Every structure is written in C-alpha cells, then in structure tokens.
Length: 494
Image 1 (tube, helix red, strand yellow):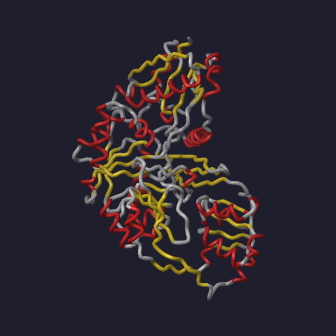
Image 2: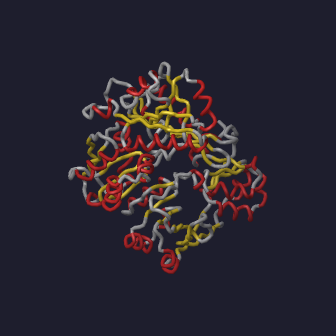
Image 3: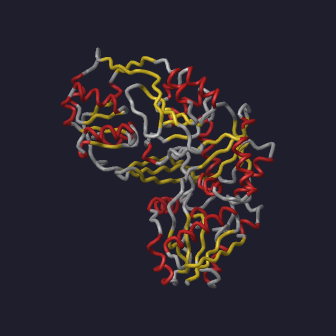
C-alpha cells in the first residue's frame, strides 16, 4: 500500500483543506494511505505581525518548504492566495481541487443596524479599500465606516468579533465559511449557531469587490524532482485557468497581500463566457476593470438600436393572493420595480433572505431599507453566483406577468406590462444592423410585430434575456455582452 504524507497548517480550516485533498486522492486510488502532519506557520506564531507591511513573503507557507525538501512530507496543501507569486526553487504547485466560491462574506451584528458609525474588522488593505469605495451604497442605512485590524485563524477571529462590543462587522472569504460549516467541531458549531442568530449576512458582488487572486482555490505543492508522485497524481487535479490569470495579473501589478488590489476571473454558461473583474489602488494608479469575453466580440456595427427606444407602461397588480401562497424563505427581485408597498410589508414581517439580479436593483432596494444578501450581477443563474445561505429555501421570484420564473421558484407577478407604440420610430428599428435587449419578453413582442427582425443581429446581457434570444435566433445572429454599456463600447464602429 502506497503512503502519501500531507502537511498543512494546524488551524481548523487548514486541516479541513488538507483532508479534502487526502480524501480526493483516496477516492481515485483505493490502495493509498494518507498521513497528515499539522503545525503552526510563522504567521500563526506571530500574531503581532502586520501582514500588510510584512517583509517576509509567504508568512503562512514558507515554513513548509523545508519539510518538502527534507522529505518529511510529500505534499503540502495551502490556500492558493497565501502563496507568494514568485516560483519557489525546487518546489512547484502540482494540482488543485475544484475552486470554491471566491467571493467575500460580510457579517453585521443585528444590534448595529441603527448605528451611524460601523466598525468593520479586517486585516486586508484590499477589503478596507473596497469597503470605502462601495459598501455604504449596499447597506440599507447611512453610516460611516471605521476599520480595525484583526488577526488569528478563522474561528478565533469569529470569536473575537462576537465578543468585541466595539466591533460591528467582519469580512471573511465565503469559501472559508462554507468549508468550516461542514466541520463537526463542537466549538465552531456553537459559533455558527451564535453567528446565525446575532448577525445579518451579505455576499459581496465581484464587480465591486473582486477578491484576492486565487481566493477559494487550494494549491497542492510537491518537490519538483518528485516526478514519480506527480505522474501518479496527474490525472486527478482540476485545471485552474482563472486562478492562473488572476495570479499573472497580480504579478504584473507588483504582487503581494499588501496591495489594495483584487482580481477575479469567472467562466460560466454553455458558451463558456469569461468575465474578469479588477479593482484597486496600486502606487498612483487607480484600477477599475470589467472585461467580458464571448464569441463574436470582434463584430462592429454602424447602425445600433437599443430597447430603451421602447415605451413600456406598467399596470400594478394586486399581489396579496400570490404572496400569501408563496410565503418564501427567499425572495428574488428581477428588478427593483417589484418592491411594492405590499411586498415591502411582507419582507418586514417575515425577514426572508433577499437576492436580486443586478447591482442597480441592489442599490435601489437598499435605499428602501431592504437588506440584500447577494445578487447574480446581471450574469444570470448560469453564472453560479446565486448561492443561498438559507438551507433548502422556499424561493419566490418577483417579476411581471409575462415572464417565467426560473426552475425551483414560485412566481409572483407584481405588474402587467403593455407596449405604447404611439410615438415609436419604426424606421430606426428597421434600419438598425443590431438591436440590444434587456427583456426577452419585449424582444418576442417586437419580433412578432416585425418578423423581419429575425434577419438582424441581436445582443443582450448573459442572463435570462440571452436564453430567450437563443431560442429564437440562429447562433451566429446572437451577441452576448456584459451590459448595455459594454455592448456600446465594444460593438460600435468608429
């Protein structure tokens, strides 16, 4: 029987990650025995070390390099984001498992929602910078943000947060939270119970809060010379092109956890759309990048028409019956216009988890004192960004009466939409080479009225509208963009 020795830090999270790798190996090779070795790193021992200015590279990882070189262990498992950018002599990353959700998760004490001054615990310059830029717009109350450093492993930081009367909020990697929730450790399970009872949660959107490059991914290191072990395990790892891209860009930006900088790449959908979010302040340069790559991105047009030329009238519907039947644990807003007085009353009475389709809707809901847990960032459900924190929730989808609800949702229609064609400029639509749509239902109505539209190119965001267009058009006629602004930027002929 072959024995593989796996080492990691001795924190609860690090042990969980090492065991996941060990279990993954054993799932593919039944005759392999795993031995685990856990110890503290320099960063664990020195809690007074300021990570944002520390001269050491890899303060949580470098202690294990010697163990690999002296063959005390065969593999070392780290959170990939903790590894230095520079390639290590004699050591290389040989594999990884499927990446967890890379986003950040905010905990806010319920007792702090009425405060005009919020103390947020974080030791990350990136998180502090991003919160200063964008967090207040997503909160359903006005406040100033004050930042306070926190150190220790994840359970220790949660405990410090809960016991610190001067602390109001704390930010952690969602991947770390999801991994630790599955641990049977009684002390941490007690912390989970207390956190759920005393705090509100918010999954921060990647477009405003791109994460530390490689966040959510595990890196498995081995000696470069150990070709036999690398060959033995080579077939079981998951490719990580998004992580490689994030790390490459980080290297170009100067590298290091001391940067006020985040970068996240995401690949999703049947067409393998790729979106890359980058934000930060490096040296004197302020960075804000949203790149979206899809097929036909090189097409340019002279005559462009967008759905904004249509005049749509809404007739609000009585929703009492639908809402009383729904009684969901989770409400999803396709648009902010579905927040009627009646819906808001239901939300205040039942306090469900609230999600929405995009950042604009999130901000509108927050301005109406609605706490939003997360959004799909206008990328649709195929993006994988819809990850409810409520276990197996009963889900309500708020929309208009022409739209269908996604699978697994109960639809509640808040209004009926009618087209007003009285002042419509038909010539502009007819002359357009390409049309941009924000509603699949309005596209179908226009297509029914003007069948000749089927011969044109049509564009939309990557969500449910794109799915509707795909069912009505030939593949070479459809263009998918990140947003209307992205469409106008990338497809207008200069």
